[in-house]
Amino acid sequence: MDRAKLSTAMQREKERFLARTPKSAALFENAKKVMPGGVPMSWMSKWPGEYPTFVASANGARFTDVDGNEYVDLCFPVTILYGYGMHSGDVKGCAVGGDDVS
Image (cartoon, rainbow, N blue to C red; front, side, top):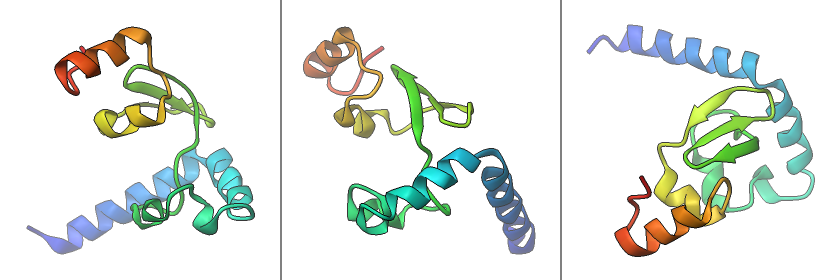
């Protein structure tokens, strides 16, 4: 593994994230005024990145942030607990088949 290339790629991705998420950055600054670390749970402050992505809408495991970027939530079994983007079928699927909500 070429650590120099890895470091360069990581820096490029950090810069790309900052450039495409200015609204999330602004919301994070506001959140820091009312929540310690700007996040609702202290362990979230240890996640990588300068700030969290703020979700504008979601459907199932797909969500769109406040800047219009679309994502597939690969942490769906965890984030389903927060309730965004769920449909009654998703909840039933979780109850019956664990985290398989397909």
